[in-house]
Image (tube, rainbow, N blue to C red; front, side, top):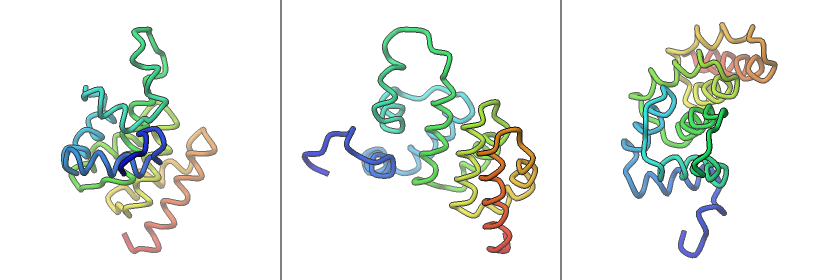
Length: 146
């Protein structure tokens, strides 16, 4: 997208551009690594997080690094390969509700039948948004016969 600032891109556009630059397998691998807490290069984090990522590179301590895991999961909404299944299943057990919610969105989008049982269990999560995402994922997976 010539002439467009990276910050004017939607998350989907930014991830697609990163796939074009690095290759889809590398982006998927990086997203999976972020979800499970493994290090990735700063440029991938910036591509996945957009303008919100800037604050994490200011040299200060941050107590909200769960955003890296959220962004990793969000990346898998738009760049998916089966190799990321273990990471997205791990997202469903994350301490941060935002990571669990995003993991459920990925499962629903890509109809990951292997995650049906784990998604069903989150219908009783303590966070309403996670419960709603779990219900949606279960409905979509069931309708798809997953």
